[in-house]
Length: 373
Image (cartoon, rainbow, N blue to C red; front, side, top):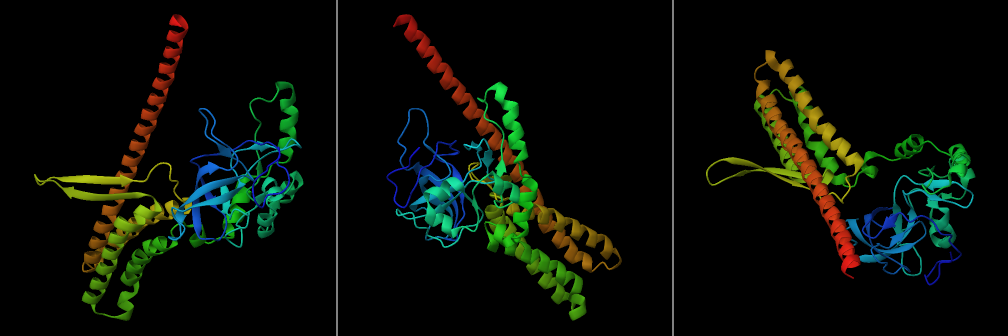
């Protein structure tokens, strides 16, 4: 199918499965400073009855930056899809998909806002947008490149359900021969990036680890520098207090989209209050893993210190403060996570019930129309 009327585009693109409808969020794969792009509309595709316009690899969309530099956020700008997670079939019979949905910010002429692209670019995009292909180190070109490992993230997929039963086994055999293990591809990509590159909020992640690590170091080695115990106690308590406030009010909200606090009612009773992110906003896997692991590991470390300091009771003062503050965050975020999952489950059930009632209403109206029409 020919793509016409888009500046900077050249060549033809054959029809393919579209995996990014309006409202989808994709990663920004360039170095412009944007993190996530929210698809608003698809260029060249008008509204369709009861269907959202959707984009595939190589399509231009209008998007807004959900996460990124302040000067880019909430601005509407053109973007081109370079990868999609939904499988599609090529003319040679290979089913292909990538590990993520990704795009790059461009101008109406097809020129990139950034200067480099992270990860591969699909052949469908490279054929249409040569300027984007020239900025990428890897262009996934054919099934042969899958076997040679030239296109990380690119993996053959499964068959579409409407394939004829008689041809299904033969095509599947061809697909399996062109399959690249997803775990191997993903691990190779992650090995080339540090946790700060993988994180969506590296500054928040840094301070999330800084204060709790510094408190443990001062507790262990402070006596080697000075014999003044009150000074060590004050430094440790200050670091633990900074850590408690940072985790409770900043890093939890940014890294995992959760926040908790305790509200005192007029009658004097305490009520736990929880906030959670919108389910449509995905959480960075690296941020989530480091946040929860450090939250629980720190408590275990201080409990171990409590047993070791039984022979020197004065150190129990520091350990007691550390366990109290860290345990408060553990309990608060654990309860907040449970509350968020309960809200999401309730919301999904409510939306499903609303959709079912809408379908039943339309069927009932159609039946009445046939009877009395």
